[in-house]
Each structure stands twice: as structure tokens, then as C-alpha cells.
Length: 306
View 1 (cartoon, rainbow, N blue to C red):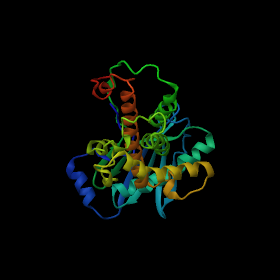
View 2 (view 1 turned 30 degrees about the vertical axis):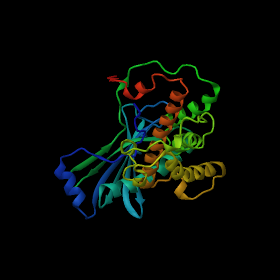
View 3 (view 1 turned 30 degrees about the horizontal axis):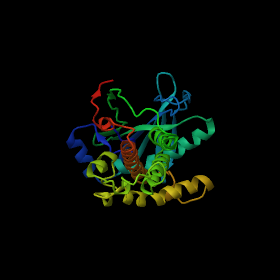
View 4 (view 1 turned 135 degrees about the horizontal axis):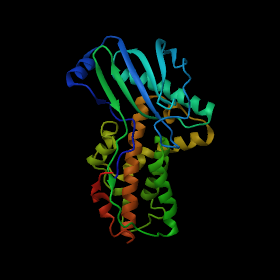
């Protein structure tokens, strides 16, 4: 079963409904605490390789001209695992957006300074005055029963499968969009290995279920009842802009993975949808070529608890 690969999902309430509603209705400036949980993309551990020095955990900073504090939180091993901001704001999303911009730059600088991996694994937000709390952490799916796969495939499929594995494995929404988007474009354009005359992959439908699962229902409503060809047309411009920027270090903020939370969330959701559709198109091609007699069971396999 395909699962979304998207950390920038909506905040999940952790306190009673009345506290959340009261916080969302309030408009006055008040104190919010926003904590970003960190991980190491290489080791997959929810910690970094940076030791937190005692007595140097808190800094006074300014975000968008306003006084804030930032704390470096260590785990039991003394390693940095969370960066916590205390900020004045009028709402949870505004507090998250402002601190997301700041932490995005902080982690980029740390990666350069230490030559190690610093990634955001999730976050939590608290409205101190209204005692409302939200949290966002990755979805942990159940394990799947192993089943017979397609076996050895002709070399023409090797690049497509490698690109799809990279799209599934990366923590970067931009790279996921680039890799899965290349598959989508090849399939719609009937380039190898998608030349089959018996399939019109460009007409593959984009269903409401796909939009819901990928998180694009709110950000790309125009894709409802669209096709893979229409999705390719939406994606190809941003994908080429990202490729150009990678090759030349040139391009505007609209094409970069900047600290804009709303833009980054929309990009991650679009990457999810392209990933999902690309997988469907590859499976349809393998099925059509007779390499995957049990392809239907890939979606229907019964999950088991890990």
C-alpha cells in the first residue's frame, strides 16, 4: 500500500476541542512555544550528531523584528534532538510559519558548519495562554506481508525503478518532485519503457482519493477529476525550474526549498501526488507487459503489525 511521504501535514490537535477552538478564535498577541524534532537522515535516528554544551542551550534572538528565545534541547545522550522557540504570535499557524523560516536557515548553516545531516522529523506547537497543543510527526504504517514480485526485468526498466526508489527514499520534497516527475513525463510522452500502444497512460485518472491521500485536495483543487497528462502539465514547469536551479544556482525563491511553510507544504503535497501517480503508471506498464501477474495484490496486500 502506498503511503504519503509528507512531513508538512496539518497540525493534529492534542488537547480538548474547546481549547483548540478558543485558541483559533483568539486574535491577540500571546506566547507560543514551537519545538522542531530533529533527525539524522543518514542514521535515521531521531537525534543529530551535535552535542549540546551545558550552559549554552538558550539564545535570545529576533524573528521578523520581534524578541524570541530559542533553546537547544538534548536527549539522554546529550545530543541535540529538538530546537524549541518561544515566540509572540496571534495564532498557531503564524507561530509555526515564522519559526519554520528561522529553523530552516539554522539547519542549513549547521549542515555546512559540521558536515553532518540535520533534518526536521516533526514539530509541536503550544498556545501557552489557552493551553492548546498541536503535534505533527511522521505516520508509522504497519508492515506488509512479503509477496512474489515481478522478478528480473529487462534493462530498459532499470532507470525507471531506480528513479522511483530515489523518489520514495529521499527526505527532500524537491528531489521527490524531480525524480517522480521524470517518470510521469516519460510515461505521458510514451518514452521507453512506456511505448505500449495498448495503454494511454496520459489518460490515467486523478481521483479524489489520490488527492486526499497525497494532501493535494486543498492545495490543487483544479486537479480533481484530471488526468496524468494534466498533472504532468502542472508539474513540468516547476520541475524544470528546480533542475535549472540545481544546475546553475540561479532561480527565484518560488522554485527553491525556502523556509516558506505554506509553499513548502504545497510542494510536498504535489510531490506526494506525482509519486503516487508515477507508481501507478509503472505498475500499469509492467502489468501490460506481462511482468507482474500479481500486481493487483500490491495495493490489496493485508498489512500485519510490525
